[in-house]
Image 1 (cartoon, rainbow, N blue to C red):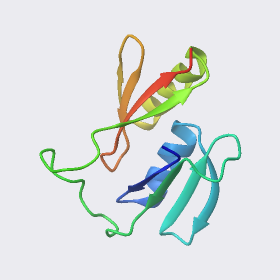
Image 2: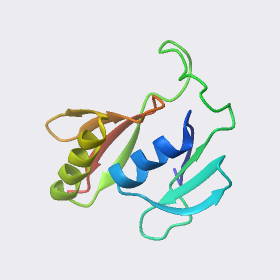
Image 3: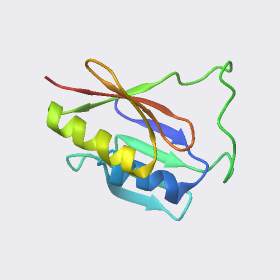
Image 4: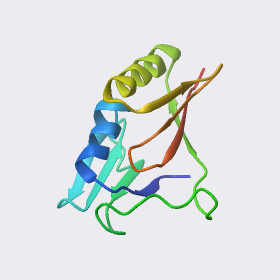
Length: 116
């Protein structure tokens, strides 16, 4: 998959999660309603938007939708650094043997792993 678009309830809060926590860079914005993020200067890997409404709740657990997506880090050191930054932000972080599970502040689940 080339990229993913996600609804977030609070753009600035979740933008900090993705940039300061996960380590992605903002490559473009449409006002305060959409942000496009990437690594390595790609046009975007992840897009965030508030088009369902600012403050809209996450879908119910039993509803159809995204179960999780995976972000791949270059090595274990980069993965551990990102997990530590997320913990400092107060994000949910669950360490597993070969990956880290987290959820952004709008309820989008993410598996973090390495290319190793």
